[in-house]
View 1 (cartoon, rainbow, N blue to C red):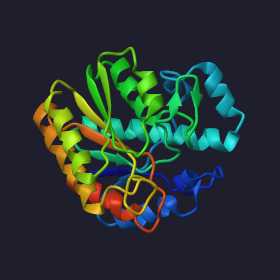
View 2 (cartoon, rainbow, N blue to C red; view 1 turned 90 degrees about the vertical axis):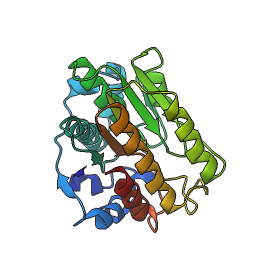
View 3 (cartoon, rainbow, N blue to C red; view 1 turned 180 degrees about the vertical axis):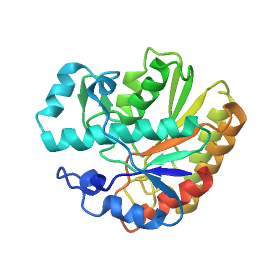
View 4 (cartoon, one colour; view 1 turned 30 degrees about the vertical axis):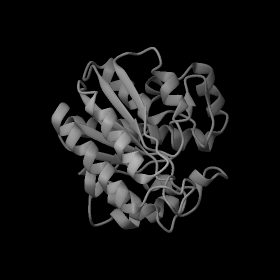
Length: 250
């Protein structure tokens, strides 16, 4: 398991919960010494425009510090995806998050859709054909759904459930009926935890989610799988939740 990470992700670039001081550090401290870290490069504008309209790119450019870190987040997602194609699972410890970024707009602490761009780059380079994106963040990734609404080769699934058991069962039921993919990508949000905004999942549930997705990827696409960070805001538990997920996912 490789962790894609840059110290620049620690920089506070805005005044929102995703950009909060210490949020990336609390995850890094849990993963350091357990996994191998590799550093990404910023995405070039050509890659960002695989998903986003030029007008949206220009809007983000008006915030120079945000554009710099958002481009690096896209680059991190691309590096994570490419690493997984080489046969090793990977996790993008990146920010800003991205799943609320549509081609022409963004909200919810997002600017560019990291996971959507990483998948689209693999598709445009003909390195994959069909992809599954599983999103277990508390919030529906409207930006990802909008991006691939008319792309039958990419399936987006947002896992929901009022209890942890229902949540896990819904994920398993979906995977039972979807089998033909070249890669599994995961929007990994941790804000549904019992001590975060959602108040549903326990730390051990994230390990179960990771294990389910690992086994599914091994069954359908030779184990090609990767995940990138989306939400998760309680720093007292966030690092432990990410570590639990990765221990199931590796």
